[in-house]
Length: 598
Image (cartoon, rainbow, N blue to C red; front, side):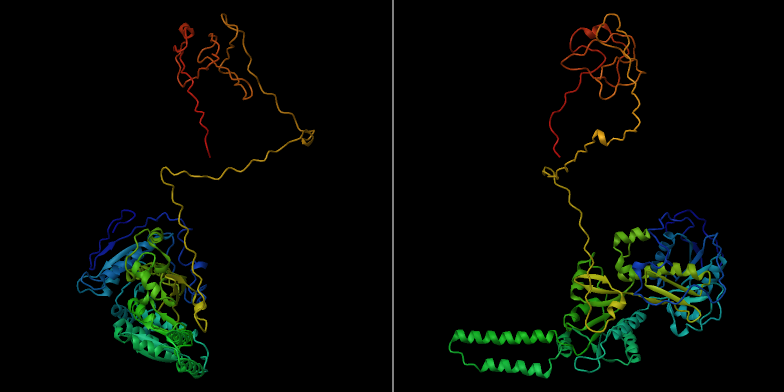
């Protein structure tokens, strides 16, 4: 990997090998364009989630010497590992965050040897002089670290084992992009948005729509844990494309018995009429269709049997299901149902229109940057897939977490590219993450604070962002451009009585003194070049260059010669012979009298 400066590779005799992939050279990024991660920005608040007070630490901080560069060791899996590609993407985010930070670090990669263990990698990082270790990514390796009694160096693991968060060694903290955590957060938002009771006075219910995939099963299990904990009634629907019509019937709103009886009576009365002719029969059928249409419209706006739906499926399946759901049903999902960026993908645009009013959770990095903004922020190309972008965001936030954990700060909180991150190491070794909430609206992805979405009742109105103003195209060749006329200039009249009487007079201006005419000429004065130039109000005389005391012929009334940039040193007598002869000057160019139009 290319680095900003040449550095000597580390020589580690014991496996696995350690290779330096970054340098100490800071990147010249303005501080205003790249703010520090631990400085909360008002415009990127993490859903206004409450944070613990991190002004003090519970244990004495072991500060890293600020006069030297921090060294971070990143643990890579073996070359034949299925996690290698994902780990390299995280490493790219880690290096990009370091290069664009005001305090860049030295990043070392510690690759696992064949059959090597994570303990050997950590020992190699200690021998290389690392201050903190980032990794591993595999859950089983993190589980092995969490069972140890101690670690020789601060470690930021990239996966989490919540059941061991209180028994993990003191030098270990765990951060992850767990989809189950997102499902837990989304389910709690959906519960908060439930009304106290339905219009008929019963308790509101939630529909859980899922498929039989592995990821979907895990998300569904997380949903169910929260709903059972919150004592909310729910029903699970396993979705298949063949059973979509049946699903629509099960979720369709029902009219009250009174409204249903009214529509039946109106339709029965119309059908009981005996039309006299064909025209009357057509009018009867049209009136019946109008009543049926009125009934369908009322059904569409009626209260659904389930106040909300929690989706555990991908975006393509959710696009087929969304059109079958009632209009007033609140739809919630995790980042698995993200349709993609409508600004860069036509398929994502189509999915975004199908998933209108869907609220889902996502990393801020995926919804805030386009390709150009991403490259300006991180000085590298943006990853293509959604999963690669999330892994990159994990690496970016792991850099800031490692920088602070290297000083053994037990309370850490900041707004990152994966969401709002909070660590209270005295309570848990797991870094809590609060993702952003995004709403699909009119084919766009709009960030909406969670407190605005978690309002009981129907979906609140979402304000769409202002579209960017396209630049004005340049006119084509040969096009007449009409520009606005210049504004009229108002003249200012200064009267003599308005001038103060005690105003000092202006100093006199020196005028050139004309010497006596040279013998042989009685009209053309000669001035010395060192004398004061004439004022603009005085007539401009044609001066003889480079010589003083040489007779100069009078200017012709037809055209005055113009002084060129270079003139011969001598002016001979032949300069007076006739028009067109050489005099050491060129004839004045012809002035173009064509007016300039504005």
